[in-house]
Length: 83
Image: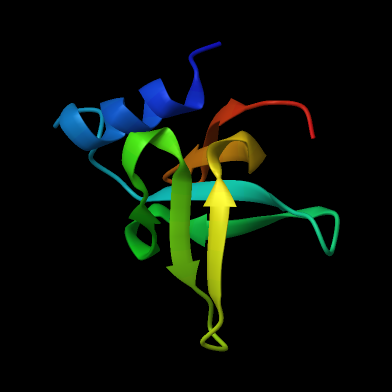
């Protein structure tokens, strides 16, 4: 399995592969379930630290890469690791 930071780099830098709607599924530590957020709604942090986003209620979240459990492209699961 490709490491998540390599997949995210490929999405960003490979123009053919990077076309489409991408969604990240991350483990929410409070609810203990996978939540999804559009890749277009996140800001990646430097040095493979993770990503940040603001939810619908205006709350800012910071998620480390190791909590990403799924990646979806155009509603198709293309990457996952055990929860």
